[in-house]
Structures are given as structure tokens and as C-alpha cells.
Length: 221
Image (cartoon, rainbow, N blue to C red):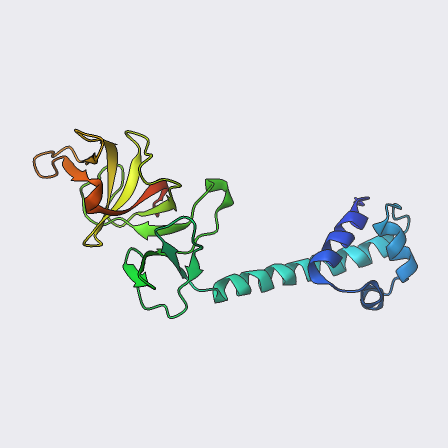
């Protein structure tokens, strides 16, 4: 069946590729005047001409997607995420520090995170790996969590999951609640063994950074 919207597809392809109409006409053997008419909304009437353009677009759009994926692969795999939200995350071009490491650049602590492209998750700024069994069964050892910076570190949602970094630059995941006073927070493990993983009380002076956990990413076996 003929797709009468192929003119819209042609226009979108030209916008993405920056290929001029004369070049498309030469590649397909179609008159550029015909292609311009289709792009402006005229429906194709010649079936052979239609399939010439369709075959061309199928091939070229596929190549565009391959090129896009190649460009994605060439981007740095990790990002430097400053603790301060008013500073932009930047690629870690040297690739020396693993995700979850805290480095210092111009006296500003930065969390190294794996880069992620997942618009459906919302405001995700990177991914780090969970280590240990303290948060099982919610977050198992080796699973990855998507995190985002807070606009104000002091504004937390009680009972939600956060990635907390202390002033030794050690990070851990916990459910967070308001502490005994307004200057402290209580960190709760999900592990049923609360003797082994008891609640932790920390005042804000002991916290270097806190990031909201947006989602967990677990590889299925």
C-alpha cells in the first residue's frame, strides 16, 4: 500500500540529514519538481516513482540511525556531576575514575556517574552501582541506580530513597527520614537484618552530598 504521507517523511529526512533536493533527485531518478510537490503535500500518483523514493528513504534513514548510534558510542561513558545544582555536568574525558567515585575539581566535589539516555525516566543525571547487601531486596548488590541532584539538599521527602555521600566521600543508598532534630537525618536500611544494618543518624555537617534515587536498573538473567 502507498503511504500518502511520504512527503512528510521526505521533509523530516532532509531536515535531519541536510541533503539537498537535487541530490535526492539524482539518487532516485525522480524529478526534483515532483519531490518538492510531494513534500508540500501532493499525494504520489505514480506507484513506481513512489517505491523509488520509499526504497531510498528506507536505506538512508537506516544509515542515519547507524551514524547516530556510532556518535553515541563515541561520547564519554562517564560524566562529572558537581554536587551543586547550579553547575553543569561535564564529560569525564580522561575516563580514569569509575562511576560512584567522588573527585574534586577546582575545589568542587563531583560525583562520577555513568552517562544514561532515558528520557522516560525523567530528570535523571547519571547512574551509579549499588554495592553490598544493606538495601536488599529493594536494591541488590551490583544493581545500578539512576540519580539526580536536588535543588535544595535540605528538602527531602521522608521515606524516599537517596544516595548519600559523607565527608569521607563514601556513598550509600538509604531510605531517609527527618532525624531527632532539624539538623539531622535518619538513614534506614531495607535489609531485614536490622542488627547488622541498624538505622544511622547523621547531622547535615556530616553529609557532603545527597542525590535522589529516580529508578533502579537491574539486568535480568
